[in-house]
Image 1 (cartoon, helix red, strand yellow):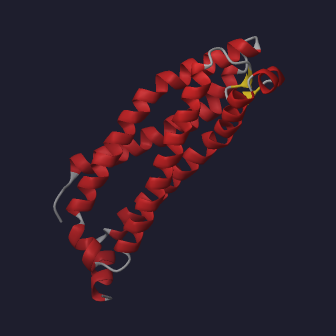
Image 2: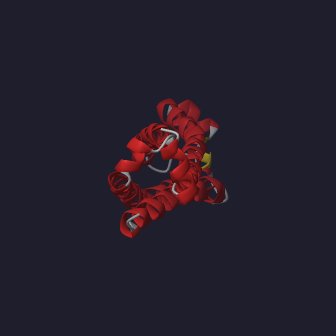
Length: 182
């Protein structure tokens, strides 16, 4: 089996940053923003943090996708010949598409909230009563972000688990067994 260190590294590091960054922001940034002193300051701090994370997240996702393409190319024979690998690859592609869609939609919502300025918020993603009354559209975006902040790490965490399974499929015994079964 040939080595694919560069594509595997891009795949793994990109996915790790995508998963870890979104989870850390959901767990820490949004909660910490809630301690900013006022509801308006909370919104300002959360927006600033997520806006700073966005370019890093985009680079992480790009690295992951480039690495993923490299891994598919490097393993195209295994995908075609080893039982279970095509199914795993299909599942991984579907979960990646879902994670990309959730991330893109989250960014659209985040831009809407950020463009509204220092929107009063109880935490980074929970609108204050004042926002619900005065800026209902922004409050709705915040409420959707409150859910998506957990959906994205769940999807990218699922990708980490599928990637671990894919690595197990590359063990010589698994390859031999999978090819013999075809």
